[in-house]
Length: 488
Image (cartoon, rainbow, N blue to C red):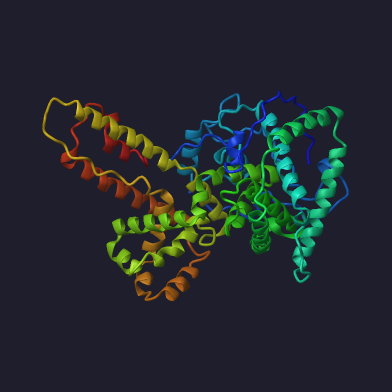
């Protein structure tokens, strides 16, 4: 763990955090979200060094996810960050979408802005202070549940999984080194951290835990974490200790977000953040900010809504395939929910899946959809003030709930249309979809999904223009022009 930044932190008022609301949101650490293509080799990714040493500082070889990436590192994306370190969020999201993601070396710094850990409006001078505060607050949160449930501090081992036993040992070594490094901090740093820890103590004093739900969440987490994909290089050798880091993050999240708690699948999702950010603290806050928007997908109502939307989109694109799949209910679309929930994690090669997750999370098309909505609204206002009394029917609107991930899913279904039409029951359907794991080509899928998206919007635009819209005096306000600018 690197020595903390030697910057003073101005006092900030303590917050009272109701237990039923999101901690990350209440702290104000989530950036304000805007509502809303080559494979990367293993050698390009930063991964733990696979041996242990007793040295410290720059010579420390044990993977130390407690040490975040430098918060002042500038982004190497053209036109995205200004001289003071502020990020143009719209340009960042557009760059990710139009360039098919970012390079592996840029991914960690970019994700800290993309997922809201750092506000895009923050400067390079402000972020070290924010990083320090987030670190203290996270560890205060973790200590709170550990003190209340001391038996849950360590993962219980049954002795039959040698890799898990090794993971615990590596994790313990790492924790001891973190403690030794803390003892070597300067008096000035310790004094400042004491003040921040006092703030955090006051901040979380009124937070209470569900004494029935949280132990149950911990029990499920302890079952799911060992099932996380250990074949990834990130979890090889001493990297096995990262499984215990993942466990602590998930328990802390469940403890401070009781309205969401923990659901199966969150371990795979959070593991993606931990692998890219390689920091326990940064992973927690980035994952929390992501879940602000997508936690509903882990609930039953969110699951049903996603399936409903995918079925509706497929009906627009291929009525025959839609009719074949729905039969008597929506149950035949449930496999799509796993694809959508985990960002097609198993359907593409691992590093392509990371890149796709990045593209889907940039919300670029949803952002432009807002511009289209504004253009359509302006046209409605213009017609309302028209001197003609001839009534004008409402335009057929593009379904803005058809997000780009739904078009990715539909593209996979359409690419395998003939095989799907041969499936006669759910067993055959599941067997077929399982055969797709790790076999799909990302660049081809992205290109086809863009085409489907464009064609869908174009059809909707022509429906709108045919008899429903007057010729606009200003090209910029024209709805069709806005739609055609999607992929320009």
